[in-house]
Image (cartoon, rainbow, N blue to C red):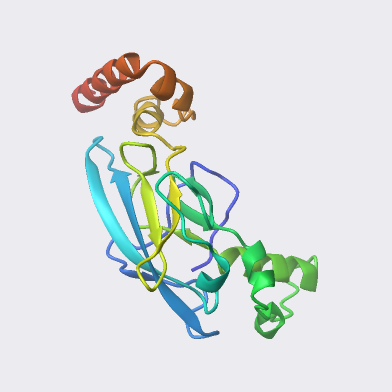
Length: 201
């Protein structure tokens, strides 16, 4: 699976029906992690999802157990999916040089550029769904192969952020985390108004 990592609000490239995700299938030993998360569809409807992420073998040993609200090995959640810490690959001795192709057309910056690409794509995953969210009501949870919680995310994108982005046609790109935490009643009111606008418009 090849895709840009830069735009936090780009669409996911993961097939909607995907159940196992690996950006370099068959190229190194892996561990099967489980991620549970929520998505918002184009009509503002919520759905819970879960898929298997195949991270390089040994990744779980370098990630501490966490409680809900602690990010652990989760670096960031964006509309398109989940990013785990690529730096952990260095800690576990992941040999990315075995995957280097030397393709100068794809990587004009040379081996350094390709190695960065490998580190990111081994730990960053597009998740199935139109708009992935992660807040205190709809958290993302990441479990190691033994079932231990080793990552969670509640810092956005929020449900309101997803609705505002959709109603505005992509012009409003904000997580509304401050409103959610400091003015929850207002947050819920705006969610209701945007849902109505989305479904009527």
